[in-house]
Length: 323
Image: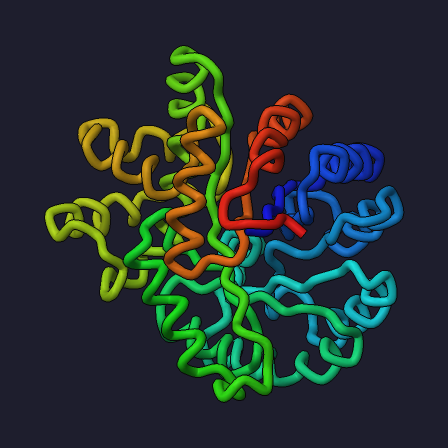
């Protein structure tokens, strides 16, 4: 299984340092988040590529709303010359809402992918689509793109997205390579019970953020306990986009404070927290369900320590090779 570490770019030099650390730790690649609260996406990706020699680097993820498709195509042509660039796209979430716009509808994402396909293929640039549900997974498969599954560490929900993408693949007879499926998880490799407990507290709001992306548009085919549906719908209406994706104490961390059972469920589904051997075992389960890679978001606040600890996953990777 290919392992990719995700990063929210704050400073060009720091982004280059993070890329070097990820490469040294044995990661297949590095994803760069697209946010109006961070450094510019493609400049940051360029800095990461310049600082490394083997690491694949790409957007995790950008969108068709805040930049015109012509800008994305130019970036693909330019960065694709390295042979190590990939383009992750989605409908847009907090990055779009933060500037007062709405996420792209499915038809708009369809048009965008159609306009990107020829440019991406000419540049040998893989395209990955953030998919929270089967309709988006089908769209990705139709355009010959891979998916970044928002299903979390639930093999049943993940398998449904993989099946939807591969059933809609442009050439399911085998003319195209099998559709890539990346599972997106928050990651903290810990060595003590105290570290594990602290990491679960810190990652709770990020697990809630991931669940809102996956569940807010409905629970169909997402393998969520029915007893949680009404509670989650009500709490998502109070979600604070100003703190989207942030770890630690913030308003989203307390959305489910009266429901520790749901908190634990979301942490276990959308985060990978624990000793390296336990994390490898869970990744192996997801590889068996069809995942070919994992997008792993570490704590940005202590990124170098987190990457160093997570490097243990690359020593004996789940599901086979990491490159």
